[in-house]
Image 1: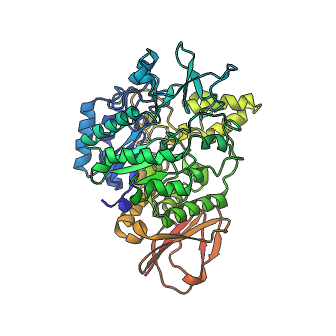
Image 2: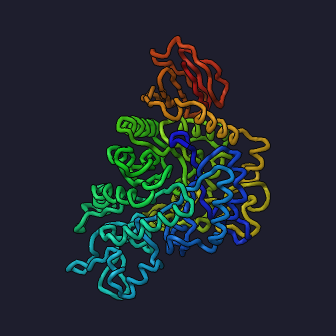
Image 3: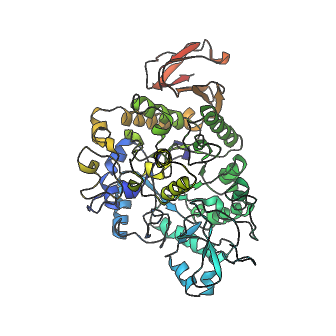
Amino acid sequence: MKLSKRVMYQIYPKSFQDTTGDGYGDLQGIIKRLDYLKELGIDMIWSSPFYPSPQYDNGYDVSDYTGINPDYGTMEDFDELMEELQKRGIDLMMDMVFNHVSTEHEWFQKALAGDQYYQDFFYLEPAKEDGSLPTNWDSKFGGPAWEKFGDTDLYYLHLYDVHQADLNWYNPNVRKELQKVLNFWLDKGVKGFRFDVLNVIGKELPFVDSEEPGSAQEKSLYTDTPIVHQWVKELNQASFGTREDIVTVGEMSSTDVPNGVRYTNPAEEELSMIFNFHHLKVDYENGEKWSNPDFDFLELKRILDEWQTGMSDGDGWNALFLSNHDQPRANSRFGDIENYPFETATMLAQTIQFLRGTPYIYQGEEIGMTNPNYTSIEEYNDIETHNNYQILLDKGVSEAEALEIIQAKSRDNGRTPVQWDDSDHAGFTTGNPWLNVAPNYKEVNATNELANGQIFSYYQELIKLRREYDVISDGTYRGLLLDHPEVMAYVRELEDEKLLVFSHFYPGEVTVTLPDEFKGLSAKKLIGNGTLEEMSDSITLNAYETVAFLIK
């Protein structure tokens, strides 16, 4: 299927469906729910890692790239999953965590044991002459980015958790091993790869201190360096680029539009598309994630417009999303889930899915799942959450205020078990779930949604429209009403067709006047979640209403 027609669905397997009663999702659980996903209409699953892992970072600390974590099943279960997916015309995208490995990985353990060959797989540096760490860099999970390497006088780099040792991509043997990993899974029938934090693999050497730990300047020392593009091309040419119809997406931390274009322009032969996260930092106070201000709507529009326009101009390709396993639920973040749950969920879905790019649905979005708002820090599992909760307390923030910030920003917001029905633990498990189910599961669950709701069916219609109308999948993008304080609007154009999209991000009514170029034109309502049926020179949108008009 053409890339622009595809719709992806992300599964976080630990929280998707448990079939053994151990409280953890598993591969058989994915198999159990494939008919549900087929009914939704998606054609590719991206699954977060299910490799062997000590789970310090919920599977993103991989200890064996070509194995199956026993908590999730066996390789036989994986083979069965591939067979069942094929029956339903659904492909699988695997998650590749190639910036770092678990410190329990065989490579790191051999390095610890003194094997020089494997020591060269990592960044091992001595302390400075004054005894301080090799650099003053911060880990993205809090604390310093260097840790003592066993009983030696060296330190290893970990940009993320201390149990995740960064791989030295300058070593060609590392790159060859990772290419082997991709080809192993390609031979198993995998049709896609999502690459975790791929643009930080190229640290600038020699290592130097940053001007300010944790700053943008510090990130520039290891983010989007020119050699990353060289290595991604090499990875392409040695693995997925040699096969037909393989879809790749890179998670790009703190990247920019020019690099986004380079990563995804087909002529560069690097990746199919990228995730960028700038639009999900519009509720960061002064750039600080662990804060809880209202989101900046005009900034959200500005960033989406910048990326839509820039990637289009450079023939790049966006991955479209508002939620994933690292983000709070978008409906809790950008809408009103108490008073307008249907309108909020469908408005956000339509806004993002009708942009130029490939849309990703995160598990539970299609039924309106929300942040859980746990009432104590003990209910949270995520290591980043606990680290930053303590940092907030150390800064003098009260426990109540710190918990409010955690409730808004924790990665566990997107990791609560999928709410399948109103039975105990929402039908996720017969045992005790690894993470508590959100308290609203009695009302918000897949069984209730399929029987009585409208969100799931709205997602189905959005997916069908993408397949049916080339203007949605392949049209150009142009932002409209960019200064309007409550409405996001844009036009998609292809040959003689135009698709006009209007989305109201606030409660109450709002009336907008159409740009002159569209006044007096006849249009057909393609889809909408409210009462507006006809396009006129000025239109009135209700709370969280979205509508799309087709002009021929």
